[in-house]
Amino acid sequence: MSEAGVLSMRVVGFAGYSGSGKTTLVEQLVGHLRLSGQKVSVIKHAHHKFDIDYPGKDSWRHRKAGAYEVLVASSHLLALQRESAQPVEYTVGDLLPMLETVDWVFVEGFKHAPIPKIEVWRHAAGKPVCYPDDPHILAIATDDADKLPQPTTARLLDLNQPAAIAQWLLDEQERFTYRP
Image 1 (cartoon, helix red, strand yellow):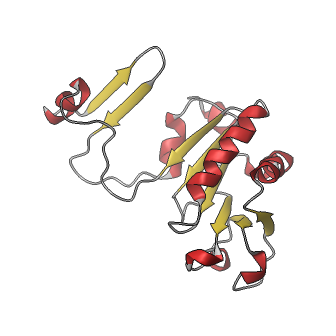
Image 2 (image 1 turned 180 degrees about the vertical axis):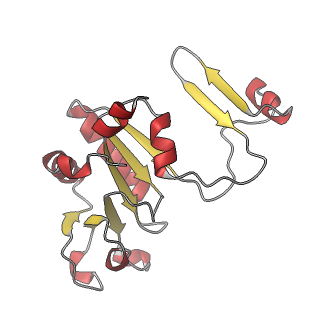
Image 3 (image 1 turned 180 degrees about the horizontal axis):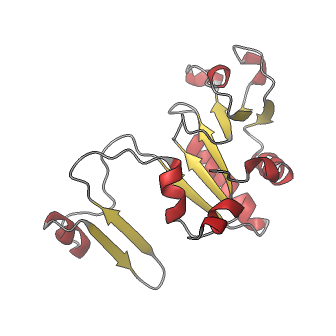
């Protein structure tokens, strides 16, 4: 992708602990923004070793034989797998140029990335909040704003109203323009 393409995208992170509902919210927002004519990509951080392939498939066999990268392409799907001998922690800045130019990139799981974020927080999950220590959190999507443990100046969004959150993103889109 060209640098101009990266600079024209809007990027928003979704922060919060496991069980807060980040994946569900991202899934809902992708659908709402697509209905609004927006093109959306997602970058998801996995905390553990994972595999999108399985034994016996050609691409799995190529990787296990020692291929550094395996690019699988069909008329409907493209997947790049890259095997690293040593652990590599990619940053959001490393990953964004790998994507095609889109209107929005939702980033899930890169909790400490220096990008504008929405924190997803549920009181019932019993997890701490991130917003007091993260100046990049612009909004908090929650199902119980009255139970937030600390006051905040961040925008409060109703986690159970994904259409309203999608509209807020569209209304505030300039705040999310990517600036590396």
